[in-house]
Length: 253
Image (cartoon, rainbow, N blue to C red; front, top):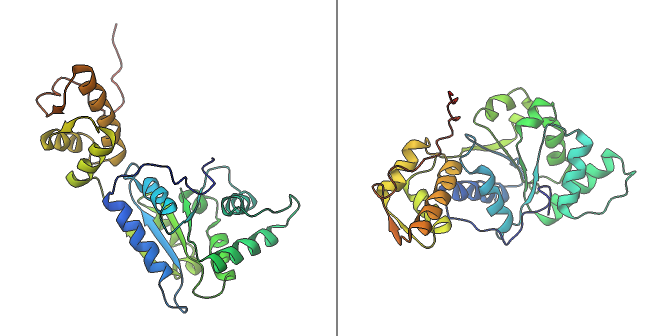
């Protein structure tokens, strides 16, 4: 299944803070009054687990439609990706206006939120107002659309006044903390108990990046399995390479 289709329900998730933050934003959008706009923004650093949170919302009872923007998107490519995610069959010759109309109709009748990940690409390509148009084409109070992007996405959206004034809320993704790391350890190190001092070491070395903590926990699990360990702490993992995100140093021969 491609990234432009709704997220698979078979995905495994750890109950991290950012999942809760995004779900609360979606609930706020869906439960708003009819006279209140339904655009939301979820933003934060790369690696803070925003896409993971979007996957969870897609697989939850909210059943969000999910698409991921990219640098090659045109307005038509965006519309096609969304109708595909919604499972709507449209003929190849359908006009952009027809595609947009079907999307707005689906948002209105299903009340399922639409999540557009990597939304910085839309700002780069001046496509933000196209998203606003999809929201406005649906009946008031029915369409809920969330843009997910990098830390600076809110500043980029200020250029688009008609979109910006329809944003109900901005929610900032949080860096990984010790509770998050414990949840990730349960998911990625199910056969070994990882001590808090090792989790804290990983947090400190990775600048609390959810993505990098995850990668290191995979390495911890492999190391523990190779050593036959059922539990491991910072001392037991001493001497092992920690992936900090820094590029390897140039070797000298």
